[in-house]
Length: 246
Image (tube, rainbow, N blue to C red):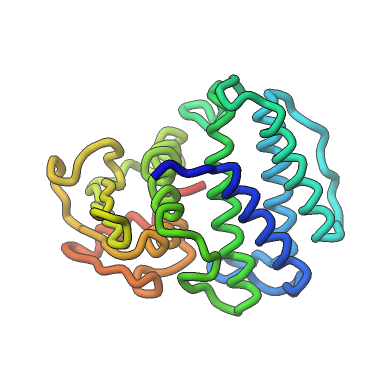
């Protein structure tokens, strides 16, 4: 399935913005330490601002230290990001996430995908803060979108974490199986690009794509996400204890 990341980004930004006024700014964000709703909203606004600058290949002016009126502040930076994407050829060269240097040249369309999933995960966070706990189904995204979130972790983010020295390579690759995708979909965490049948797999984790994604992002435990773990459970626990996402 080919995803329209720009349409998804707008949808998730709109959902995030709509949820801000009804959220307690001081409420804790589940599974995110001592992060509050205020910190979450300001973070995503800052990330949108930063990504727009990287897409343009220039460092924009800072946003200041706040405190901000959260909904208008977020709305402004969400619009800034969309405006940048509308103006820039997706195939033109900007600055993207890389390794062994943290940033490097790459196509602007990289940010279309990266900001879509950044917004989706944080939309889940905001709705979890309003609900008092995280669970599957909060953000209302389709399985194919969550599968793309998993793919980004496996093929982009986790290899970059290794390349930047933020985590050690996984000793035992893990097969991830999305059971709610037509024909199923399988990835190998720790060996991106390889097929599960060609690797020595000590653990197989299967379940809905959303559950896989939110587990990789450490928002839900495997049990909370409705996942089934076959094989050596300690292999999965060891992987999840690492900084597999930024």
